[in-house]
Image (cartoon, rainbow, N blue to C red; front, side, top):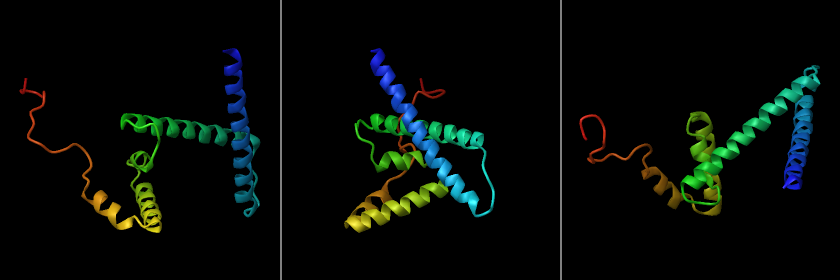
Length: 133
């Protein structure tokens, strides 16, 4: 059991190191044009922020997929993740539509998604709200 935990910790450290390197390269390239420099502390803090965001996002995607009774994450899960950011949702929807059109599935899928309603279903069912016991 200890070796499994050690391997997981080592893999996480390797991932963080690779992320730190990639973020450092990106920041250096972005700031080089403006003749600016970023401190190692800034790159380290940004790396931790990005790593935490990736972990939260992956956990949310897994939860959405499991809730839908699936073992595989699909585009529905990703679109659900973008629901609180309208601009990102629009960009993702356009890219998804572009990809589906490239696969030749654009017309069929657009008709299905256009008729789907979001939120709670409307219905005349009686809930257990106030006064409906």
